[in-house]
Image (cartoon, rainbow, N blue to C red; front, side, top):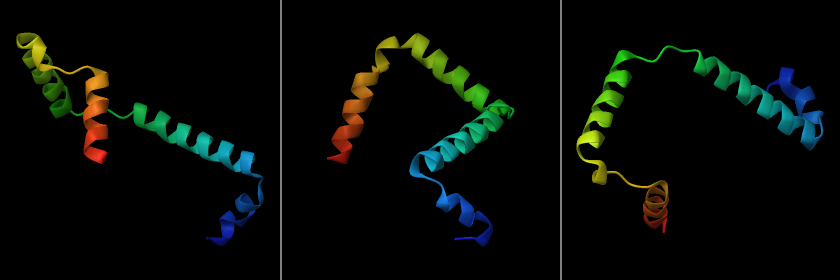
Length: 73
């Protein structure tokens, strides 16, 4: 543990959890302001186009969760 952070570990559990949540939110807020690279936009356009041509190729959220859970078992 770094010495400058020692006082944080003396906070109560609820206070430390709130601090973690606040830190995480600040990181997410910064990430939301980052520009999205053009290659990601292009990938999304291609995926949308493929799905438009073959809508039955997609899966529902429940199917995705089931498949992920089956891989974990």
